Amino acid sequence: MLRTLRLAGVGGILAYRALFNWTSPSLFVGSLLAAPVFQLLFFVYLGREIGVADDNFYVLGNVLLAATGACVTGGTMAIANERRYGTLGPLLLSPRSRVVMWGGRALPYIGNALLVMTFTLLCAAATVGLRMPMSGMPGLLLALTAASLSGTAFGMVIGSVGLRAKNTMVMANIAYTMLILLTGTIVSRDTLPAWMSAIGSVLPLTHATQAVRACSSGADLAVVLGHVGEELAVCLLYTLMAAALLKYFEWMSRKGASLDAI
Amino acid sequence: MRWRWLVRVVHRGVRAQFLTMSRARLLIVFNVLTPVVYATIAMYLYGADQPGKLLQVSVGAGLMGVWTSVLFGSGGAVQNKRWAGLLEPLISTPAPFWVILFSISLATSIVGMYAMIATVFWGAVFFGMPLAFPSPVLFLTATGVCVLSMGMMGMLLASTFVFMRNANALANTLDHPIWLLSGMLVPIATLPGWMQPLTWVLPTTWGAAAVHNSLDGGPVLWPMLGAIVLGAVYLTLALLALRRVEQLARRQATLALA
Image (cartoon, chains in turn green, purple):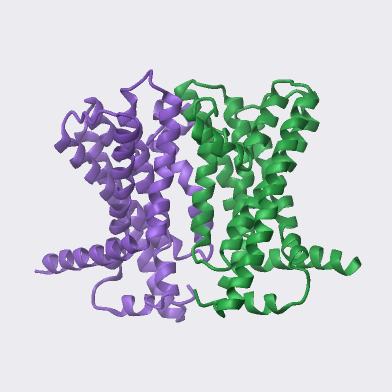
């Protein structure tokens, strides 16, 4: 048990330090802290120009989107960079449990995402204002945590493709862009066509967005918990998908002796 | 005679870089997809009540795509050449390095035009946006000037990013600020007063204003002139920065590490 925890914890931190491209202070601040705040300001001013929704709508949506930079790209790097740096072969020679090994890597990114969301939230409160009743804070915290979990699981799915394919970072960026459109963080899902809204319902952030908006409007905690539960269900879906894809791609690579060949 | 030679080097450089970038299909998809998504967001937000805004939105989102291409293409130009082992050969060729770098920067902004074409096509096909350009010639001229000014700005990025090992950190942060401050999608008048002076010193602001004005009948000549003059200032600063980099790299023999 202790060995398993050690593999997940220490292994996860070591992998984070080795594989996350943005661990240096300048990259961390630039890519994970400053960029989401600028994105938030962009959408707040766009929202003011259009006048469809108030600042709070865009602030809450962008706070959740801020997590995706940290956890979707982070989750992708946690797997795909092994291949990029030529360490995938030795890693897959290890007899240890793949679930623990890959799962441990997700932990630092979940923490990262929470940190980034909190920072973005504080910056938003200081610059453009934030409307959130005190009674909504526990629900907000739960929603942010659920968003971090589901976002990281989503990133691991993209990262698993990195076992076989190149350019996973571009894929992660494309996925991130689609999250902006489909999850209701910037555009209300009621405005989108039904098919887009349907896709959004199985993407990370969508239900967390509903949860934070419910918190902001002073909804009952039970309503918030319902949305958080849906977000966690999406997280479970992507976690299972990532586990299955990692197993399948590893098997494919061994079968075709093509681990680093593609 | 020398001018003809320089133009030839720029032409060849732009062509080579353009073709190289155009072959990176996934990158092109990303460069096109982001502005298309932003255009879609803005179109859904504006809704059917303001059909007159759709063309402005499409073109504005296209300009955002051009800037993204410049930011990551030019910003990473030196780094990419360094990783490919081409930096030393390029610097040691008889053609001045700034000419090569300028052609790369210009090519990245031209590649960004894929985004402009995509957003206008997207708006016309999926949102029924009328392609009612008051003066197509004026629009194309203004767009050309805007792309040129972005290329000049990209040249400054390329030359200053040489100093930084983690230049992509800065590139990651510069996307939204320039989109916002240049008024590509959000009109500058919406921004608070303290931000306004920041917008005046960006060639992209003037370039975007020229393009938008060509659509709504506003003045085009002065913004185009502003974009070219400011672009030339940025180009001059880039040349100074490059000279410094080259001197340092040659003196300390650290070109591959600079």
